Length: 453
Ligand SMILES: Cc1cc2nc3c(=O)[nH]c(=O)nc-3n(C[C@H](O)[C@H](O)[C@H](O)COP(=O)(O)OP(=O)(O)OC[C@H]3O[C@@H](n4cnc5c(N)ncnc54)[C@H](O)[C@@H]3O)c2cc1C
Image 1: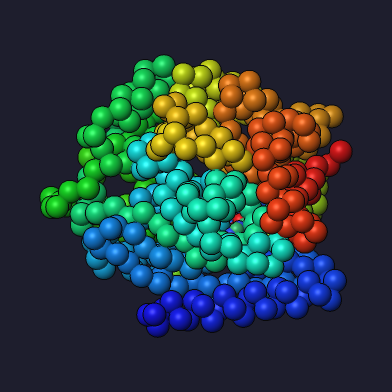
Image 2: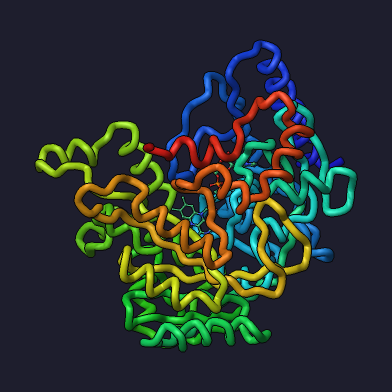
């Protein structure tokens, strides 16, 4: 056994023993990391079994293009290791602090998802510490394949992925990007569809700046670059989209192109102003923004500022990623622009890589979906309550047979929720792998906490 595997076995045994001991005391237990990238608030359990130290890359098989990784390894650490071998995970979510286990349990995607599917489709086997306190090895084909296929989108409510085997792809040193402008949504989404249909590109995504300004970005690995851009300091990636038709980045900088400014959301922290930017280089990354958000939630800075200025709380946070079938994408965008109006919006085409069914996040094989990502607060009309905008988005997801990620707020009633995320399948897994309900139920974790009515 390699040193890394031995170290994993020791950590696994420690976590399992702590979890079992805590179960025996009957205390309220939480299983997870001390930090989180979630947008909904977390109710702290009395005793947290901390799994943070399961964060190492165990092995990289450069022939079979597979990596064995501990569940709490961030994609930043993971990709630094794989790039030493000229490889990358097939799908790398945009934010450096997202972990492979969190991405597996949370339906993560990126611009290679039109080809490789969601992150969970790139995982072939894993060890899960279940709510019952057992470590179960599950894969596509073994006796625990029910857990394997039912684990995505369950956000730690069935158990925690401690070790995963992940598909890698061969990378080249650089990525060439081309940005193409559109002013008509129908044409824009047809071009997205066309870009995803062949083998010409390794990556496809897009940015909607307003109703008449949309950009499709297609990108591919290349061996050489005539020039290299750098969006880790004074230059800002999302602004470059409208300024350059062609661009080149190092492969490492491409995968983290959105991280420096958290897409465009870093504007909320004032760091897009050149004079400020000059001074805050060490703070220009998503991990720093999470920290600021965490402090804000803890100490209520925004509320205090608002009340000092005499502003009542009449805004709704509309932070969502939703997947809509591409044929309905122009319609969804028109609704979104008219009723909600957040700009910019991130567009990421996604398609299941195989006919395999993941019941708790079911997508149709052969269907191209467009992930719309929008993250901002919107003023509420007089008399309306929190949920007014998010419910409209949920209704659109429902009527277009799309899917919504659960990392943020959700307002579904129980029946609609379980229709979307296969309650029957989920509850059968819960009964089998967490029969005493030691971990929260998915509905209670992702919806109840957010409900205001
Ligand atoms: C603002 C924002 C933007 C986002 N943008 C994108 C995006 O562009 N692309 C994208 O792919 N995703 C995006 N996500 C979603 C993100 O991928 C998921 O929320 C993912 O679950 C985060 O993983 P994490 O490692 O950061 O986990 P955490 O934030 O720590 O936890 C997220 C949830 O997953 C559970 N979890 C964490 N680790 C494990 C594990 N090992 N096993 C089981 N459950 C676990 C936790 O209990 C928790 O419920 C975004 C999320 C936010 C908040």
